Image 1 (cartoon, one colour):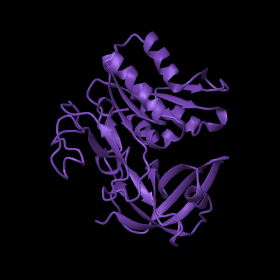
Image 2 (image 1 turned 30 degrees about the horizontal axis):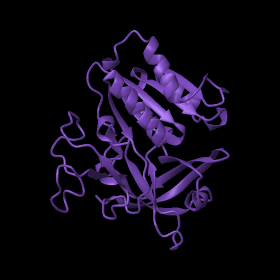
Image 3 (image 1 turned 180 degrees about the horizontal axis):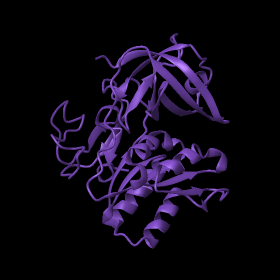
Image 4 (image 1 turned 120 degrees about the horizontal axis):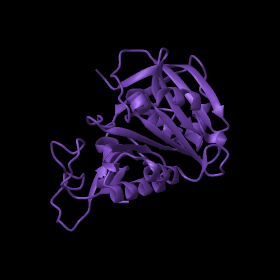
Length: 283
């Protein structure tokens, strides 16, 4: 079954001044997506822009597949103009998604800004077992709040301006929770997606508390399949006790020739990720 497929635009709803919810109906049978995976969407049938754009799988709906996207540049501005009935080209699902939750673990879902596009499907999968920490700049930037409240056991919000929830970053809110909880830190598993500074801060918390965690990393990419090498990130050397590294551990630069133990290892976000163990990434 090919990962290339065409889909019809079913709806393209504006949720706020800079975020849309896109629903597409595949015109053929496709592979089932898993939380954390992504798709490459061709935003134009012309050569401008030439390259497709990567977008996290948000959720499935009765009409098809949904994507939550933020208007950041020319490509996403063109997507905002997608009209109902229009046919577009997609490639996916791609990449490695979030690993399964281990027995007796409590999932802590951490989303910063548009990172909820990746985390939402995990909230659907884990349901009332999960606690969701959702950070944003202001109340306007928070999305799908009512739906999320119905999915998770507890929704804890932090906003930079204090307009909703606690004032502060989502990492501040996470730290407050860990200080007050009666459970041990090792009882939790972190799943996160958001800006790099947020992910780095989460990794520091996880290291200090000896917590297991996985995050979805965002990088610019041109192909989505590991051919262009545009999305390489630096990672640490093994060993790692992670379900994402079973079956071998080789960086993309190791595959292309021998390197010394002093040289860094690079992995591709599109092929080896976008989800990585927190302890693996060099921030």
